[in-house]
Image (cartoon, rainbow, N blue to C red; front, side, top):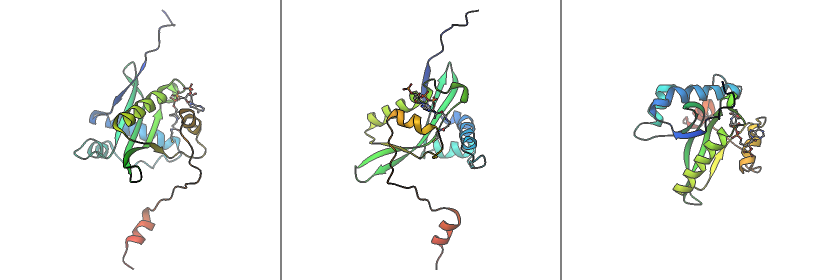
Length: 166
Ligand SMILES: CC(C)(COP(=O)(O)OP(=O)(O)OC[C@H]1O[C@@H](n2cnc3c(N)ncnc32)[C@H](O)[C@@H]1OP(=O)(O)O)[C@@H](O)C(=O)NCCC(=O)NCCS
């Protein structure tokens, strides 16, 4: 047996409705990694409805090695009125642990950057937890930490309260 057989190259493809179980599994894996194992209330069915229907709310790229899925990036679209251009917001990026540091996520991000350039999108944004070593990965790729902007969110009871008539 030849234990020096070449490792198959990583390929990247657009996710389709047939991938919703995989997208869901990877999202749950990422949520667990981020210490929020119960945060994913989406289901494969809701992913099919919201990502692959008439008005898709997100898209995803899947990385494969030798035909086996090894990672994904899931993203939504935004728009900058200042630059009159669309942008991409990364919701999830995940590489299976045994494939890390092998260029899988770089291949995913390169494909995403190519889509941006081809379509005239001006930027890629994301949020990352302060303790996550993925920060070094983003910085390696050229992402900049925007230090003077802080994320704010209105949700749950606070959202209901503001929406309620006084
Ligand atoms: C972050 C993550 C997606 C990176 O995936 P990966 O496939 O291992 O990354 P790559 O091998 O493509 O690395 C690309 C570059 O970043 C560097 N890099 C990757 N992970 C790094 C780390 N933890 N620390 C320092 N550098 C890192 C690599 O050395 C590589 O540099 P090079 O191309 O100059 O050699 C992966 O570690 C992961 O899935 N982490 C858990 C999920 C997660 O944190 N997602 C982000 C949520 S915000």
